[in-house]
Amino acid sequence: MFKKTWKQIKMFFILIIILFGIPHSILASVATENEKAGFEYYRKLNESEKRLYEFKDNDEALKLKLAQLEIINKSRKRHNAPPVKLDILASRVANSMSQEAAKNNYLGHWNMAGEEPFLRYAFAGGYDHVSENAYGEWLSDTYNLSSQAISSMMKTGHEKFMAEKAPYDGHKKNIVNKSHNFVGIGFYLSGKQFRYYEEFIDRYFDFENIPSEVKAGDSFSIKLNTNGQSYLYYLIVFRENFPKRLDPVQISKKGSYRDYTDQIVKEITAWDLSRYRNGTFYQIPLSFPKEGLYYIQIFSDKKEITKPASLNTKEKTPESGIVIKIRK
Image 1: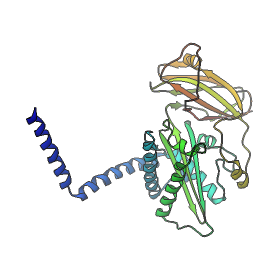
Image 2: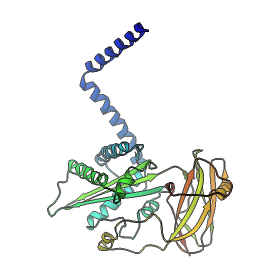
Image 3: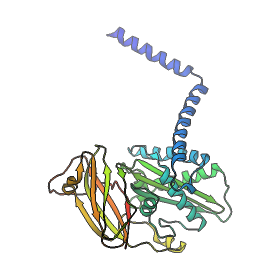
Image 4: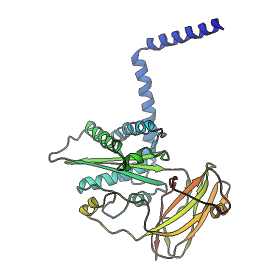
């Protein structure tokens, strides 16, 4: 027993000696290779994504965002939340918002077309749920237009989110929400204005053939695949009128946004949703008689409910952010 233990102890000390004997340059090169592999992965995703191509990041901006992603994930780790991956489309949505806000001297969650975050992401082609954080800085003088300055200001913005105290800690809660699995990062620095946006994404379903626009009264369907990870629990549809343009002053006065509207037009329970399941696929028929924008949120659960029961979405995060335009 003792001999075996002593042998293990000797092997432990030998391992320590070997590790300390490895040149630091070799350890550094291993880290560099890992970083390079991560960059190449996201670079390929960035090149293959064709949506919002005018807001595509160059290689330097992508590297800055991957460094910021590490900061975000360190914050999440401290609060026992799993890491998130960088989402290319959401990053371009954030770039677009950052650029418009900086160029027009405002900070807010609406753009000048009057669109909330879930509308902007959906109109870009996203189907998942999105939750936005917004940060801005401005000077009387002009900023230093360097990568170091941008990196420092993104870090500052994130740190200010994380420094929030309850009950005014909505940005912090968004960052450490355990349901998020992707994040879009956007920034824009120009002259006296800097803007930084985080778009946290909840992506759990694969969607197929979701129409962006439907004629009023026409039938269509939402088709999705849960990949065997869950069962649909609840579906709710909110309606709002087509947005009206806003000026920078109006946007800056609006403050935070709501992840819903005042008008609920449809609710489908778990036991009704179960009727639309075929294996891991669901095909949910829908039809809306009045023109407007219809925001569809879907919730899931690990267990399937096939009979009427009590439902509660309070502790659940929506796993879709589908928006359908209904026209006359």
